[in-house]
Length: 143
Image 1 (cartoon, rainbow, N blue to C red):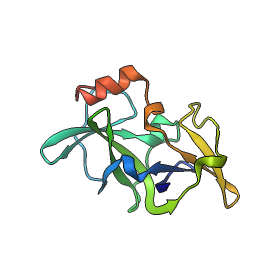
Image 2: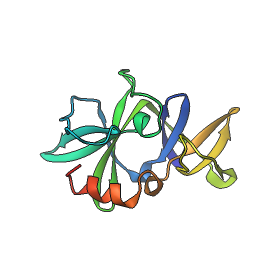
Image 3: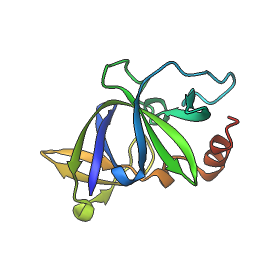
Image 4: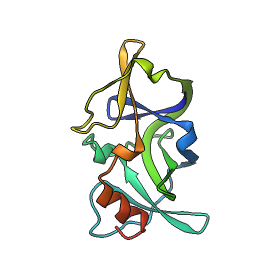
């Protein structure tokens, strides 16, 4: 599968490009007072507010670093848009998930991991990213 790779803390992750709507620069977001710490804020995308998750905070890897390569990956989840804030978003590559095994990352099983060039590459499965209740809340646009 063709995947977009990015980094969360010291770990490399990949996301199937068929799940990605668009990758946009990290721009200032509208904050949501009282929201969970992993909610970076709302992105106004073509006139529609889109919740953006800071994957670093969600996976207990601190805050997303303010690198030029940090981006918001817009994905479609249950018919709604969701933004994923990640660092070092830069590379498309072919990934073979056949030899993958599930390993937890940040205390969560986010999908299978494969060994590439002597290190792990986690293949993110969006349906595992958040519990159903949190997903529904975010996709309604009221964190």
